[in-house]
Image 1 (cartoon, one colour):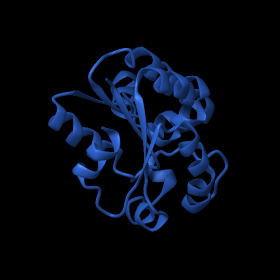
Image 2 (cartoon, one colour):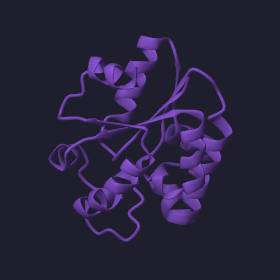
Image 3 (cartoon, one colour):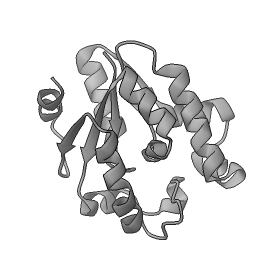
Amino acid sequence: MNITFIGMAGAGKSYMGKALAKKLGYRYLDFDAEIEKKYKKTLKELIRKRGENKFIRLEEKIVIKHTKERDTIFSPGGSIIYSKNAMHHLRRYSLVVYLDVPFNVISGRVKSIIDRGIISRGSKTLKALYIKRKPLYRKYAHVVIKCGKDIPLKKVIKAIF
């Protein structure tokens, strides 16, 4: 069984993915790290150089390449929800878990959507982006976990299993 964590930048996808992978003895795969490794550039550089739409296609290719693996926890970038193809693929090959973190927590963790390398789709502020994305995360999630500042691993395990 594969598990994919989705949510905003700063939601704790990587933290939770690594912790759960360790607990279950699964492999952990961070798609953003895979993209940076493959293209030898930061996300910010790739988005600036290629544009948002081409970057989303890069994400999609990485997802499709890896999601048929087994016993893996996946952590894609928050913009993965802009690719219907990638999300349908993730839903087919993994349990998609949305870490629903309140905006005040996200804003405390993410200082700049530009410096972080975040696909904004025209949103000028982190709040506007959060509002736009929230329904998409819910749409694609098999499981929604309401989180606060801290996300107890036991709560996540209980919600998934």
